Length: 381
Image (tube, rainbow, N blue to C red; front, side, top):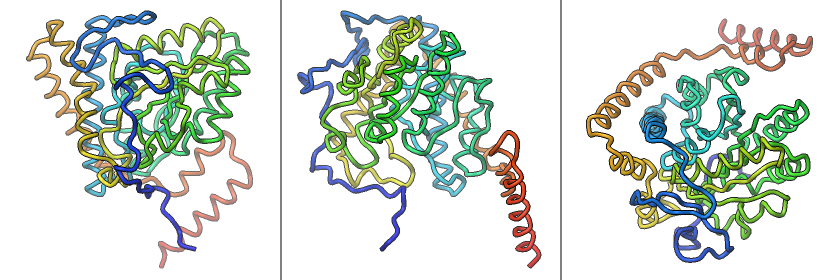
């Protein structure tokens, strides 16, 4: 039997069954897509949701989105130059991430997957931590409890169970905190994600499941992943499901804010399906030209969340000087981060044992000594 690489995508021809355009015509499943600002930065009225962000708040959100995209590009470049083991681009998904996390309190817990660089930066964390993880020299670099940000999860969907468990604990403690669990559309096909949804509903856990539907699970389009879309499936678990334009900062913020209010009131979980698009590759081990067309990519580039938000800010009076200054800041941040990545030193293999248990067991200590002795033997050759 031939071994397969876990990161090798299953190639699906682009002409086979591309994703449906969620903004074209009436949705086949009857679920509307909440939108408050269209791609041309024109306001849209909605019967339930309305914009809640001030100009200053949008400007700060855009700044984080812009800086994270610049570092995202740097991540791809560094991986191509052999400085990172892997990089998972988030280009095109910034509004879904920042719109959601900006609707939470700083005390609310977030469980990311492996693409939430924007959220890490929003919480004020040094982005070098993400690059250390992608370089393969550590599993985590920040204090989860202090920053209310979980570590990146590379086992697809595993963080949803952690989020629900944490949410159940919040309920038992009588707190009004909320948990945000981030996942992709492909993760909804995992068995443990469905278990997490069921437990959250049964125990009325204060969890918001943010499904960033970027149209592909690596190379597999949504049409070949499921027939019942994530937002539609929420009802089967006993929770509301809302579909939102994931490239619309205002709409994502409003929908998640309402879901958070429900959770704090003891009304249980909500599933939010943010319709967005992964403009780049799934990871740097992927070649999207093998399974999707340029025409499809061009369609979604025209819905770029940064372009949309910039247009709105300019209409509200934000000047060229502000955008020019931000671009200069982004270059400085990227240059500084690149220098720090190149200066990173690998950790010792035995350091792994220092982060497994709070109180090391005798068996773990013995294994650590065995590994240290083995490494010392190799170095003595």
